[in-house]
Length: 361
Picture (cartoon, rainbow, N blue to C red):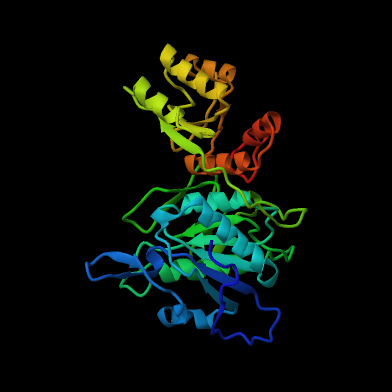
């Protein structure tokens, strides 16, 4: 794991460094299209991003105190691992007292997973952690990076006009024109600027001429101090059902050595085959202590186990209904909860609870 004592680069702005009232924001560059360059083969590859102010001179006009922290080796988001999530969480914890908000520049492909993971790992978060990135590299023609980064910074600095408190004290994703809760984000587009959607929950804010916050949808400030968790269980899998799936495939996935949890992507409101071999595979996995979380393949709606005969057996097998959780939030929730190393009863309780706004009870 890289050293947490990474150098901070102050970015020039119009704010006097002695002005302690100006919001202090830390930009963390992890990699992704936002900071890519073209190599000799014509491929986009991550580049060093230490001089963001040269690529975005408009940063100097913002009324914030800005600092930039770049990972030693930028990561293409397709290579992001749970170890990277834990390191990023520890970085935020290391600088938590020194900044009022954080903006994480990240590749779009796995941004929803990273935002969900950070939502769980940063327990009792009381400051904004806003993920953003770009579909077109910063500095390129028609890049969306400038708008996304500047708006993310404005969100991270925003204060409630009446309560004078942090406006969005949670992990979120800002992209194009909407702010999404970290546990509700899903990437839905690879060619257009509107790359993310808020699944089964309204956006926390919309960006037009101004910023329109939906305060009733934003989580309240926590009543406890930040706790940065340091363990995630990586022995998890996703089993997506489809007509014609075979016993061999299901057995292979559920029988993986070291498997601790599996997200079942089922049909409609949580339905699955009732073939004896399929139910036997599930029962055998549960008997080995594998936790099974039932998530709908539908982009909207929710799992209601027992509504149809094709899901009635799930409760008897000990399978947990995921309600309206996304696959991204379900995978990272399993990693987080199982990583706590708790007993059977407490683990089941946490998997069924709404921990970070990931499900609507």
